[in-house]
Image 1: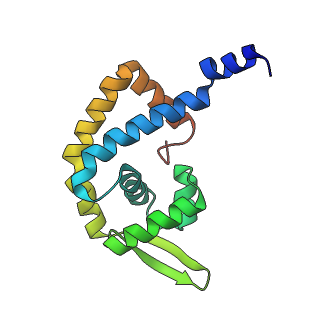
Image 2: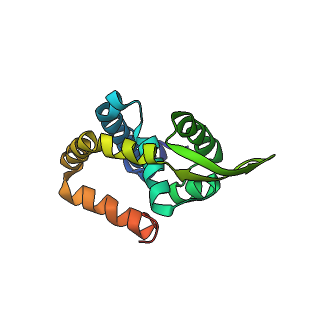
Length: 146
């Protein structure tokens, strides 16, 4: 591999940059939500479930582009907290989940800190950067129904 290939990857790779930005933003939101015993990933899962309505965990994974193991782990945590409930299950596992009243209350309780993190993220990215991320996500079908 030539040094120009190395340099090209290091200086131009969009995947690396998106992951760096993602880690920085996740840390920002998780720090803001720290006192609520919930991560931004879990809040987003709750919100997606509230938006989509009762559905299979696999559908949540599709909506949020998450791996099956990540969905399973977070669904179990959310079930244990009572923020979601299993509507149906069988020998293969949970077939359908729904956001509970406690889950909706959890979302509402984190909103002041979430909004603060959202403002900080917009400052970090700049308005144009934040708008670009919203547009890209929309073009990829998020939020559901957009």
